[in-house]
Image 1 (cartoon, rainbow over the protein chains, first blue to last red):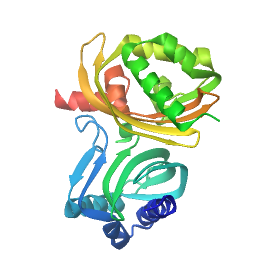
Image 2 (cartoon, each protein chain N blue to C red):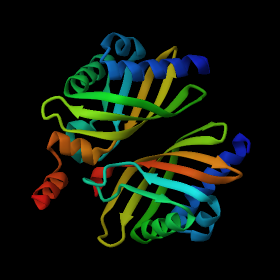
Image 3 (cartoon, chains in turn red, brown):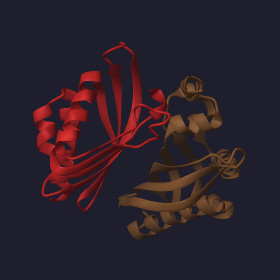
Image 4 (tube, helix red, strand yellow):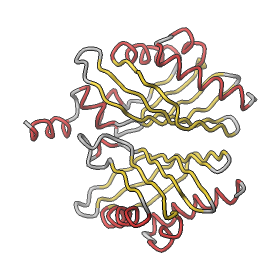
Length: 128
Length: 147
């Protein structure tokens, strides 16, 4: 994939997260993908690791059922070969409580054969 | 315009300096008007307060180096794109006072001008950092829950 294709894939991925489009998310991840929200599970319920397509989709469903996103803005998008680093900002609404927070997140993404094989996300783990 | 290889060398050097506590290298690596911010809610106080200016940032680095030692450091990703760099690294962080330690990952987004960092945005495990600093109400509550 060239740079423009990787940028397009990353943007589709984030649009799918905003829309809660599970079909598009399912299409984006490879069968053997790994998804990680970086952090210590002992002190934050947000830290998570999911390996394999089915496990990742299960986690994505939990995330999209719990958090809605709005005002998403990609602040930085760096591409290096088949890898990308993204810094983005969003307003996150916790649907169960109505709590809203505007926060920044980052992700380091590795792509192979047009699909995400590794997605490591960073966020403000102290929020939950 | 700084060359890509120069930016990569700068970032690797700054990472090594942070591990080694080499303030001379850190001082040389940042511009006078640099900014530094750990991403997180303003409610987390000084941990996430944005810093501006060389002296202010160096004072924070000195405090971080004095308070928390890094070991088993490894760069997991390092991308350079134009005048920006993104680095993901893992290290064991040890509190100098309590000796508590944990292996953690950090992500940094840097902007470089004329061979010096003008912007550093850092993502770290704020929940763990606050628990180490003992300032997080949520972390304190969880600690109480466990006791």
